[in-house]
Image (cartoon, rainbow, N blue to C red; front, side):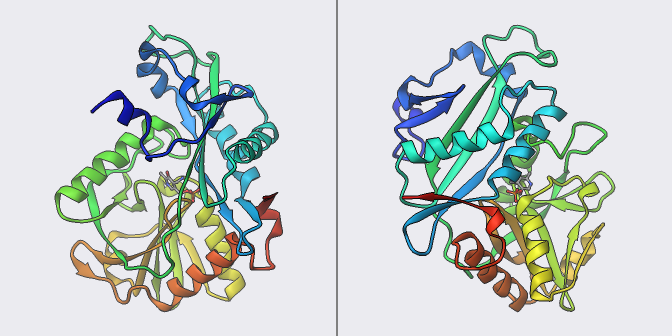
Length: 316
Ligand code: PMP
């Protein structure tokens, strides 16, 4: 692999990256090679999306304030000193979107990592941090696409006994990565991880829900899940659609009895699951998943009247 290909993972880099309060040209946003090892253990991030509105004249950043608040929570849990308020970071996201002149769905990744060259293995609490916001064009899947094949992983989801699952820490993602590698090696698309109590937790970068007899059931926040904003959005949308929901511990066997099963997350949106451990799920995408997918698309593209408070508008 050449350095050129490493530097340009998506084929086309944005012109600007936001770093410590300034817009910096992409090629100048570098760190020394010795700064990446332990600094990446002491690092947290967010992932959010800006959608091109249905009218094509605005970008709509979805739940900007909530994502920035979760970033601050992750920093707090991981004892990293975040030098900006969530409000300041929200403004920085908008500044970056404007500078890069996006006219399409865009993914944004704000992150914080321990600054400088770190010789200590254990980065101390409140070490100075860098704050960076990266962005790239990220198209949504067409709604109601084919379902994916999921499998219960032999890896357990990290838990409160070891490291906080609520933190969006880069280090946590090694867990999901191993589970994903196992799932792919066995011919599946994505893993579903159980927690240390053998209850259903989540996917490697998404929450999970099942539908049984018309009720949508998703694991509680004490099941080792990230406090997913798509999950929270989905629970609100379902109650507005009159669909009953349950938030509780979920047994593995309930996955096999589900009428419908889906992942949900910022990048994944609502992704139907067609197969679990090689067994077909009742229907894919089932009627509840379909209604939900449509409601979610209308919401993020600004065609639903409800929840203007979740959309930050950036006129183009
Ligand atoms: N769990 C994990 C581990 C994740 O990385 C994500 C994506 N942020 C989610 C769940 C879903 O969270 P959200 O809906 O806020 O994107």
